[in-house]
Every structure is written in structure tokens, then in C-alpha cells.
Image 1 (cartoon, rainbow, N blue to C red):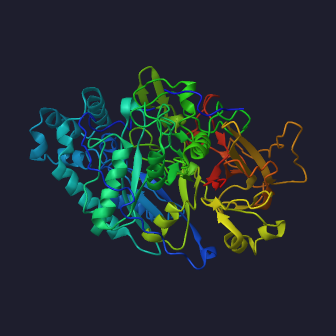
Image 2 (image 1 turned 60 degrees about the horizontal axis):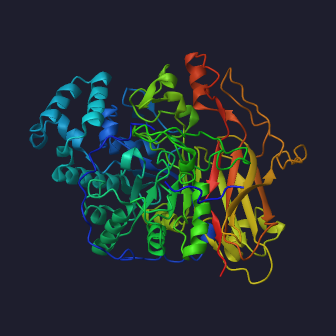
Image 3 (image 1 turned 60 degrees about the vertical axis):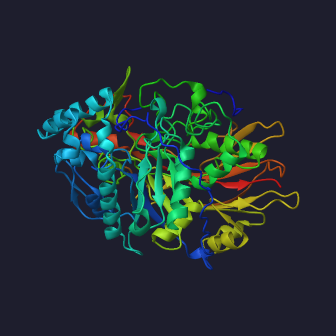
Amino acid sequence: MKSGFLVLSALMFLSACSDESATLKIDPVPDEAVVTEAAENPAPNARQVYWGDTHLHTSMSQDAFTFGVSLGAEEAYRFARGEKVSSTFGLDAQLTRPLDFLVVADHAEGLGAMDAVMAGDPRLMSDPILAQWREKLQLGTKEARVAVADDGRERGWPAALNNQDIRRSAWERQVAIGDKYNEPGRFTALLGYEWTSWPGGSNLHRVVVFRDGADRAGQILPFSRNDSPDPEDLWRFLGRYEADTGGQALAIPHNGNISNGLLFDVEKYDGETPIDADYATRRARWEPLAEVTQIKGDGETHPFLSPNDEFADYETWDKINFMGVPKTEDMLEFEYARSALRNGIALGAELGVNPFKFGMIGSTDSHTGLATADEDNFFGKHSGGMEPEPDRWQNVMGKSGETTTLGWEQASSGYAAIWADENTREALFDAMRRKETYATTGTRMTVRFFGGWDFEESDSSAGSLVEQGYARGVPMGGDLPEAEISTAPVFMVAAMKDPLGANLDRVQIVKGWVDANSETHEQVHDVVWSNAGQRQIDDAGRLTPVGSTVDLEAATYTNDIGAVELRGTWRDPDFDKEQHAFYYVRVLEIPTPRWTAYDAVRYGLELPDHVPVVGQERAYTSPIWYTPG
């Protein structure tokens, strides 16, 4: 493990797949095999924000199946579209507001194999372990499923589960269901899957998303970690997919907080070779987005990395990786989005290419078949003890080594917001590629962010912000043109509350930059806030807290504080046109009850003091970058 690259002023329940000892060598394929630029929209100010989840698991995933989930892709799409479905244990489940899009991202490893085990597929029953598992699973009890899952982790998942014919049949079924529920203009079923590399238990997972339908995506067998655990081989596979089918694909790295410093490492997969310009170019090309919040905690930043950021310690997971290997402080720098963005601009200054030039999204990583991040409608990480029930807050969700993770540590998060021309596979994918996206922790607040050189305060008014933002600047995910004179960039931001949610507390702009000594820095600026007449920034540079209206006895809050909408402009007071920099927006709501507070009221619980019951939901936009020269 390298240390100090950035100068600063887990659970077992995803480990259910096969051994990664066998790897497949991939023939070199040009990474730019097919680079089809999206057609320029003549009226980008007409773009709408669409809400969805790019990371949902169903019973087709080995681990989700052994945790008990019975819902498949059909139920997942129906739920996301707003229909009422029955959860694994018979509870009615329905979204108050449907989603606009969904990626069913089941694990490539052993895809559909547990269904085949339950069906007594003769291609699997010749394996005595799988025959025993089938006998246990037919009992239909939670204890039996747990025993199978534990056996798989301890003895290893039999290689027979990766039968290529079974996986191919399952994939063909998945993409056909996706096409069935894809309804352009109303609901988009983006086809995808999860590549689940985890060397030594450290999370390098990626969700692969296709721009295409079953006619193209159905031509391939999903590339798995059994083919190769090296991300560079995944990128080569995606290059071959594009060259062979004429389709398009991208990969989204997961939350990095269980990677023990590997997800945003400055060295390649071998842990020894430094990132070079070629690697940086390919990573930036294939991975334009990163997941920064989900059920397994928040991945924006960490209090150790951002000690001056009072909001850094949000839904923090920082104990272990999937195999129980303890986390050390030197790993944190290479796990969180903000520090990765800082390292990225430093590498960009050195190499000429930024490998971590990614936009931000959130998603659930739920293994229930239910894409919900609502605090008052939370069905948990998986169906093994996290569906709504009185004791779920203290149920053991995972045990690795000496570390146990309990139910209350799950976060009800998050969603992906995409500014797209229309609700279609092509438009959503193109918006993801250009990084015009933002992440939320479950709230559906609307956020706009533009950067330019000559915006005025009047440009941020409701009538002109979007039009002027596109006409004279760049949106979130964009690049500022080089400064031609000694001026400073001006940023416009507008945020509107979730119509069914809480008022807004404040809007912040997070800046990162590289100085003349190649050291990186960060600073959080409060730009506009609610109740401005009563709240001031103190001598320490901190804004007076917004207060709280949360009533824990009833698990309610009121919107007597905060603002429905916040908008304004901000000019960087410390801009240096010779320095590489990035800027992104963080918007915070007023405090609201956490899912644990709703459970406490629903079931009459007395929760111990260490269990959080209040939080401040938030959004993170994709950055806007400035690159000298």
C-alpha cells in the first residue's frame, strides 16, 4: 500500500460468488473501438431530470438468492414502475412515486445458477455439495438459506455454478425481460449486470450498463471475475463488445468504502505498477461515473480526509473489507470520491490525463428486488433479516473476522439523477457518458449547476439560469474552457426541495485544486442558505446550524425552517488560472427522521443512544473541471 499520495492541509453478504483463481486472457482490443458521440441537442435547456437506480439485485444473484429474496427481474421492474408487489416475506411494497429508470444488475458470477439448483438441473446435481444445498433450500427456512450461504463462503462456491450454458440462458432471459418492460418516454429498463472482483475481499465491483437492447446486449455472455479480476480486462471486453456489436457500454465503480484502498488506487491492479497515461485514458473513457452513496454507507468523503468539513461524517462505514481485513487510515484516501477527485487532478497535471474524472451518482445496491431509498419505506439490504420487522435494527447483517455489522448500520440510500433529453435508453446513457448527473441519498431534490466566466447574479434567476447556463457556460460534468485573461470562474447553482420531502438547509460548493508544489487541497464554501437573515458565518468560517423540527416521539418533522428553493452565483475568490481544479455542489436538507426512527415508532422500540435516528439528506453533483492549457 502506497501512502501519502494526497497531501491533506464489510460485510460478507456480497461475497457470494465463485473463486477467482481461474482467469481468462483477453486478446487486446482497441479501447476506442466504437466511440459514437451523442448528437448535439439543439435545445439542451429542455432537458429534464430523471430518477432511478443503477444497482439492483434480484433472485438471479447467488448471494441475494441465498439471503432469501424470491423476487426476480419482473417484480423489480414492476415495483420501479410504481406497481404494488409482494416482498419476499409477503409484505405489500409500493413506491409513492415511480422511478423513471432501473438497471437490474445481477452478479455475472453464477448468474441464475441457484434457480437451476432449486430446479434440480442435472448439470448441477452431479456435484454432491449442490445436491446437499438443494435439499436444504427445499426446506424453505431462513436457517437453511443461511447455512447454504455460510457453506459457500467457507468452502468456496462450486465451480459448477458457473456453467456457461446456464449463465447464458439466464442472461438471455434477463435481457428479454428488460426489453419487455422498456417503454421509451415512460420507463427505461437499462440493461446491465455486475462484475464482482474482490481481491482479498476488497471491493472492486463495477456495474456494466449498456446503451442497447437485447438485440445487441444479448449477443454476449457477461464478463465475470472468473474471466479476470483485473478492471483493465473488463475494459478490453467492453471494447470487444462495442467492436463486435456496434453497441455501447460503460462501467460504474461501486462505493469505494469497502475496497481497503484499492478502488481509487494510484497503482494498477498488481499493486506495484503506477498509473500511466494509457491507463488513465482508458479508465476515464470506460468509467465516466462513480457510485458515491448506497446502502453500505456514504462515499463522498471521510472525517479523517476532510477534518474541516463538519458534514463529512455521514453514514460512514470504515471498519473492514468483505473478508474482515481491518481498515487502516492510509487506505481511506483511495476509497472516497473527493480524495479520488483530488488525486485525479494531480495525476492529470502529471500525466496529461485524469483517470478519476468521474461524475457522481447514487444507487441502492439492494438485494431485495426492491429499488427504494425512502427512509419511511426501507426494505433493507437483503431479505435475510432486513425486511421490516421489530428486531431488524439489531439483527446481524454480516460477520467478518472479529467485526459484526448490525442492521441499524444500513443506510437508506441512494438514487441516481440524470439530466437527459428524454426518458430513453439512448438519451439516459448519453447523459451518463457526459456526466450530467448527480447523486442523492434518497431525496428527490432538483439541482442545477453551471460554470462559466461572465455570469451575473441576475443570470441565476428562475427565468434565465438554465438558458444562460447552457449558452454561456457548461453544466455539471463539463469542463471550463481555459481562462484567457486573469479572471475567475463564476458558478450558478439552483436547488429545489423534493416536493414530498424536507426543506433545504444550504448549498455548498466543494473546491479541490493542485498547487505549484503538486500538492492537493480542498475547501468547502457555503454559497447560499436558508433563513439568511438569522444565520451568519462565524469567525471560524462556519454557518450557524439551521436547527431541527424533528419529533422523535412521532417520527415526524415540519418545514417551518429551511427553504423551498435556493439559488445564487459564486465567484472563486482564490482562483489561479495555472492550477488544476474541480468544483462540485453539495446540497443539504434540514434534519429529518432516519429509517431507524420510523421503525422505533412503528414497533414501539427503545433504541440505544449509539443508534442514529436523525440525518440530513443530501445531494452531490458531478464536478466541473478547470484544466490549464
